[in-house]
Length: 85
Image (tube, rainbow, N blue to C red):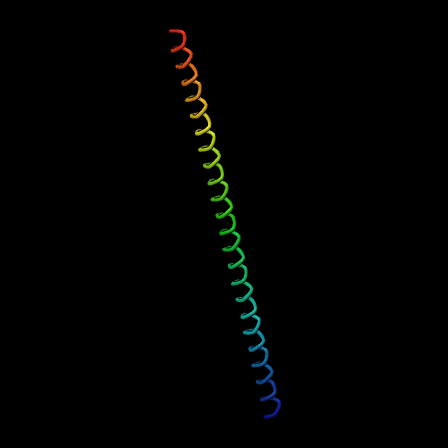
């Protein structure tokens, strides 16, 4: 009878260990899921920042080109007016 009791106790402990091992696997999986979510959020933020920087650079280049073209037109008009007068 003692052996059966000990066996049952060991079996119960073995099950308990198994459940704690399962809990560890679940906690590791949860931690991995959190890491994946954090990495995904960081990637999205980096992509958004890169897109914003590219848009800002394009806008600055367009503004510079417009300013240069307007300046050239002003110079041409000024030279034409100087010749006419």
